[in-house]
Length: 98
Image 1: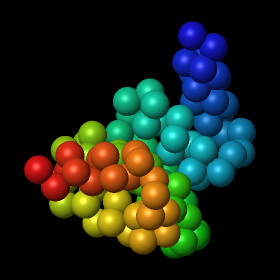
Image 2: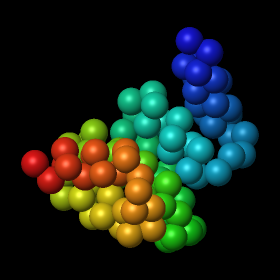
Image 3: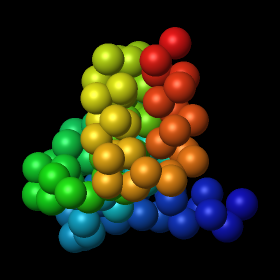
Image 4: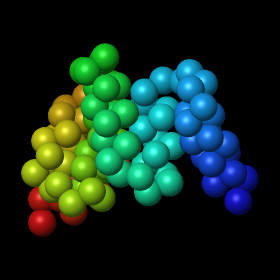
């Protein structure tokens, strides 16, 4: 409950232009189920830092949930090159590959 409230508050701050990182914004949008917005924010985060494995993982998850498995596989493969032991990246890569 507290975590969901935090995500809602973060999303509200984003709507009013209060600054935070693109990855944080993408994470919040992903948790709220706003996959298009999550993809946009996470793509920006990856363009700012192409070696951000966490942003790549989250981008892959957002692509998967948004119905784009090929893009998910690409992002998750790149994430695993940086974070080879990440269980979430491995899990979603398996789902997207199916």
